[in-house]
Amino acid sequence: TPVPATLAGARVLTTAEAEAIWRNKTGVFIDVMPRAPKPANLPQGTVWRDKPRLNIPGSMWLPDTGYGKLASVTEDYLRHGLERATGGNVSALVVVYCQADCWMSWNAAKRILTYGYTNVAWYPEGTDGWERALLEVTEGQPEPR
Image 1: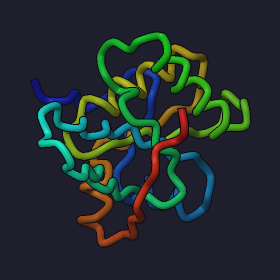
Image 2: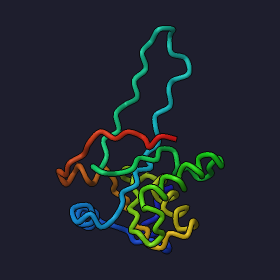
Image 3: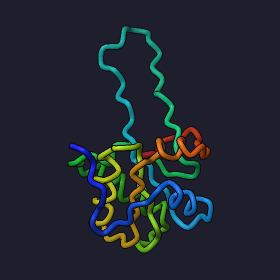
Image 4: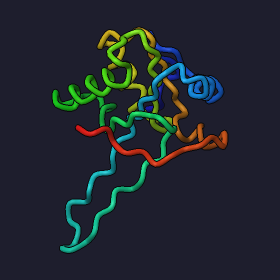
């Protein structure tokens, strides 16, 4: 199913709006792109390197927090990451993204609203829209668990 165009309680951002927030440093950017799983049947001695994730500079990457259902440990990881990103301020502007047409960012933004954050923005085009606009990306590292 296609990702909805709107999300009740959240602002939906265009690339231009996301860029303005980023340039003015008026919001925190949360990347929820999942991490590619390590293949189960790698031959012995294979060196496995995670595919680099290029994201919006200054983002906090909280991978795997956008699935429909989360284990409580992943839920805690998302909550703690948000607390660090916002300094515990639930009215801070939180911009949630992954890549275009990705349910992960929609799910995560919806979940963040249930935690009592009151200024949630969803950037549905994510890094695809960002890169199409020739904006800078940088290699991200997941926030430690």
